[in-house]
Amino acid sequence: MPGNRLEKSAGLCYSTAMKIIHPILPLYDDHSRILILGSFPSVKSRESQFFYGHPQNRFWKLIAKLYSQPVPETIEEKRALILSNHLALYDTIYSCEITGSSDASIKDAVPTDLSLILSAAPIDLICCNGAKSWELYQKHQLPLTGIPAKKLPSTSPANASWSLDRLAEAWGSVLQSAVKPTS
Image (cartoon, rainbow, N blue to C red; front, top):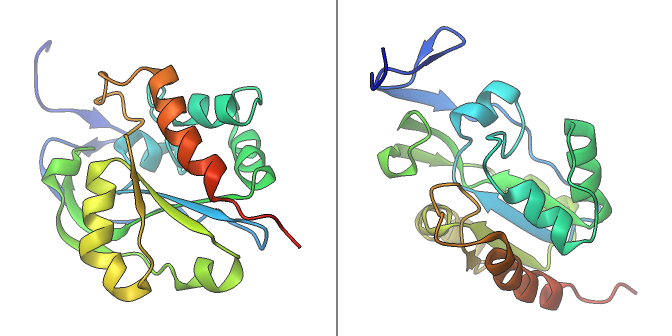
């Protein structure tokens, strides 16, 4: 029925809060220099089992633009884009109660364990994709890591007031100034 707030996908109801455990492994290698954290995977990301799975999220277009690469289509192309540019991806929250993809509905958040990434990769900078990711990082992760994070404007389609070019300017100035030369 049009206008029905009950969303169903893969047999799951997304209109009520559900306790969910993060279904995606962190993406990094021993060359990753910048860790980009989202808040928690969206419904589409959980379904696709990979980061930024909503087709209207501008994350993949943005990263491709910043590094002058083609926009990746497959998960393998997305992995290659991240790792070839010395980036790492994960989220601030490991489990939470959430309604659909709504960051505003997140309750009972349990932080991810970032120590695996931070001990394996020479991370120079932690960036949060959006205000909610940064707020969750400040509350749950900063006390554990002691590493301040940069808040970047969200690539979510809900942040429609930011064009791709405006996002690229904001993200590019932070990402490109962060990486220290390798020895």
